[in-house]
Amino acid sequence: MPHIKLSLSLKSLFFFVLGILTLLVMAKVELPLLFGQDENWERKIEAYRWILHIHAFAGSMALFIAPLQFLFDLRSMHPRLHRKLGRIYAASICIAAPLAFWIAIMSLSSAEKWTACAQASLWLYATIAAVVTAIHSQFDRHRIWILRSYALTCTFVLTRFFVDVLGMHFSQALGGNAGLTVSSSILVWICADLIAVRKHTMAWEG
Image (cartoon, rainbow, N blue to C red; front, side, top):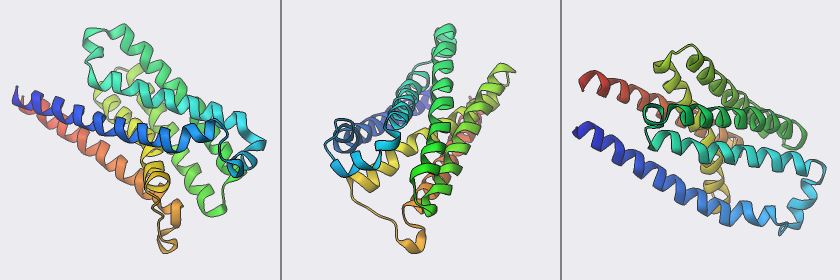
């Protein structure tokens, strides 16, 4: 019981902090861009405006659906709803990730292009692996892959918070903002694996 209460409190704290960061990013970055308040940005995205909006919408769907799966024990209480939300989550990423790849190829600098493509590919791979393991009832592996997938989903919020809200920029010696993309992806992947290991250990202990 103490393990369960601690797990729930940490989970709630994580999603509370993530929610605050998401609101700050939306208010500071995404909404002004969505409503065309930055003329330089409008000119930059003119050629692929609707592709970017579809990518952003699909990515946001994944970002907001996943906490319902993690915070509430839907799998045991409402398995049908759990599966439906899981399908929407996976479909959202299967739309958002390839579009992110396309946008990176078409619009980013060479330094940022390949890191963004690598991140999008890893995001899609982790999500497909989560779906495949669920289909084959390999639920321990499914939990690991879905944690990795959602961790990569969260890099959208983290990178924009550090760069656009706080105004932080990585040194060019560390790869600039491309380096931030790589390091944040590696960091959240490691965190996802550590959480998965901790949950597995608690299951054995408890």
